Image 1 (cartoon, one colour):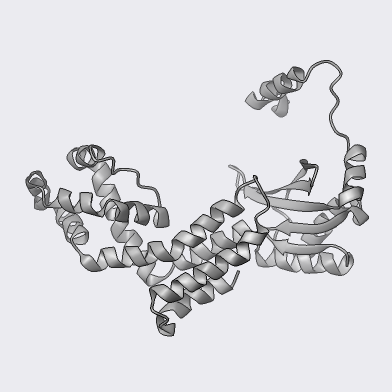
Image 2 (image 1 turned 120 degrees about the horizontal axis):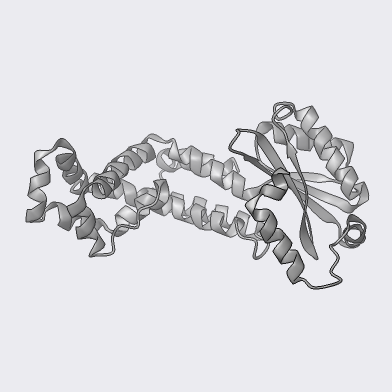
Length: 291
């Protein structure tokens, strides 16, 4: 009954009805003939619902189509690589062992071990981590570095100050300079509007905000050359990775051939930013090389 009461159920029925009289959905049997012809890839997409349950959606890819196969609650087995492997094996058996050539999941340690166990059980099936998930983890690790955290905190104070005060927000909106997002994208947005922000804090109308500690702090940050220099360094380092993440996250075309070239470009770019000074670029390059 929960499914029937869902607001999406009526939309689903409407879409099916729009296909016309005589429409039949693809069956596992018809799909299996396609998988036998080309081979297929099992993709596991893990996520957490509002009840904090750990779920995974299994999809099957072949050159003809991508098909949703099954959704499983993994809350009780997520910590056990052996149980994960058993779950993966059941999906493989559902698809047909001879039809499956590859499995892609998240990059967590339990998935890595489960992937190794799966390959040992089915030597013809290979496991690899999701490239988008790996790049996300890289961005997360870089974001923990002291230089990045300091810039993000200072940038966040500027953003919050602007959105919490009527005059700065209106002043920047007149200059189309309020499209702030989060973390790396937010730092890039701030840097793109550096001149507008500097003009704002030296504007005579800004003097009333200098009576507050936050207003003085924002002005000091905006006029701090070192802050902007660090922002520029972070933006230049992370821009290739964010661009690569967008490529990997799209369904328009296969992205694996872009990954290695994109990572090589990011590493070369990082070396050039720090003038090939190993002590400066090595911590970031080491994080990228973990992918």
